[in-house]
Length: 399
Image 1 (cartoon, rainbow, N blue to C red):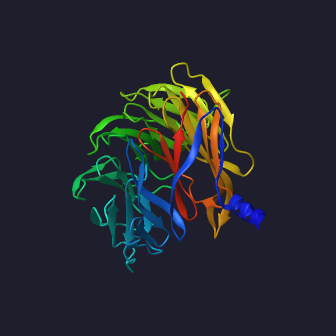
Image 2 (cartoon, rainbow, N blue to C red; image 1 turned 45 degrees about the vertical axis):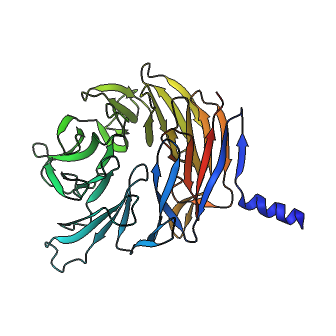
Image 3 (cartoon, rainbow, N blue to C red; image 1 turned 180 degrees about the vertical axis):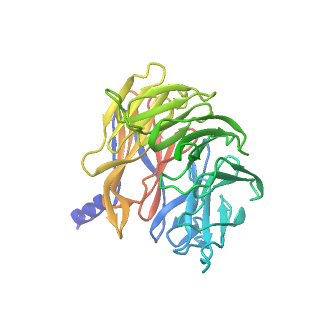
């Protein structure tokens, strides 16, 4: 009987491996009975405080389990970059007249048990929805038109502040526009494609804007496809990565461009990156593909480390710096559950910025929809959503 109990515990408990005195120890877990897609947290220097569970069909409070909002199949969920703000996009029924604008509502929630605000608007339905991005630091939101030709800026009460038009509205099949905010919310990087009437082409454009759309700089990166857009915490540097236009000779097919505070290319890096992250000091760039992480020194443009983390279907899900000396990576086996991509048997690994594996925590016999890593401001706590629980880890580092 004791052997059976031990075996059962082995199946349900995380496997914690510590090296060199550092550790990732389970500090707390918050259970839920239904499929967990995402979570909204309040994160400060001291830790992570979960506020709301986001399921496929509802949003509930963690403390009381009360349903804040139901989510139908027609609605879609928008979660901010660091999981501190969410919104629900709710389109109304299509009109029989295809040229008639379609009404919608967008309701935003933070850590409260009631909506922060609701925006009511309309759009011409051509098969694409407008895209919303949430400015965590300002408690505000922006709405990008389906073709990325205009942005509407709203304040923290959902009031329209300004509409900025970038080009003539022109349908295209390129990637959706992208937006990222700086830590203080005072800068946002915006990538879109604008229609050039002279040559009848869609031109890639990158903008750095203020929270109400004042243009700080713009640039035209030579990218056929954009895989990732990232802004440094200070808002002074912007990185964009993707596939280049018709590389010639020894030119690489993929590239990363890092722009400085004036919109001038600071670094041109010949690497593939589907995700990038600036170090807190902004002197390094952490990049990854499906299975490998690299750190690039932005002063010398040399590779500091290159670690193969994944293998086969075991792929990287997320990564982030904890501080200038450590970073964490989440990985899992890519599978599909009811047609939805998941990360099976996920784990979180703690690395030093010289590439040494310091500790790892494995979660066997469960899965995560996104395996996104959440962290406290100090970097001493990290969190991850699993199938039916949210786990908070204590990050202990040896000096």
